[in-house]
Length: 127
Image (cartoon, rainbow, N blue to C red; front, side, top):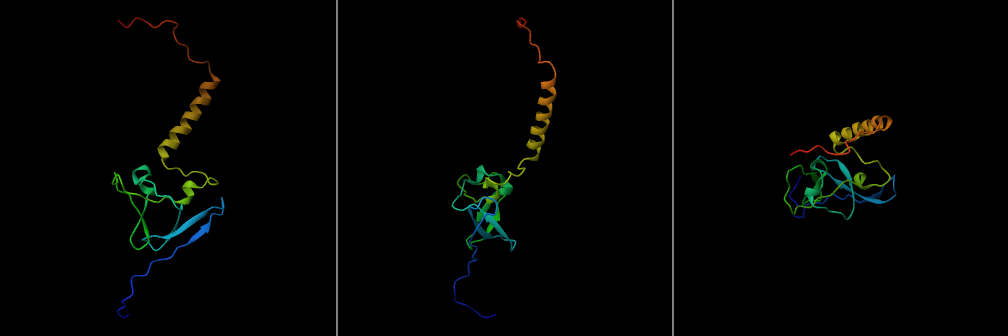
């Protein structure tokens, strides 16, 4: 390995079509020597994206998950195409909320089969 006066090489990702919806997605290298498919031309404010889904662009063109909470209010990030793809089911971003929604659905079914709750016609005087 010798000394090189060339500027550092940038990793070239490119674009590919999503096999589900057919739209373009950016193929970007990560710090872990892997690739991630990101939504092109979209950089929302980082605080609007769940911490484990914020991809921050680094100076060499790679991206890294940015889990700092709360992020800088002006920090921009990228999101994976699979989160924006209309042809794929939305992943379970908040498991506790998904569980709560499932329990509420079961409770609504149980209550639909029983009599509706009765409310007094006149509220008692609470003084």
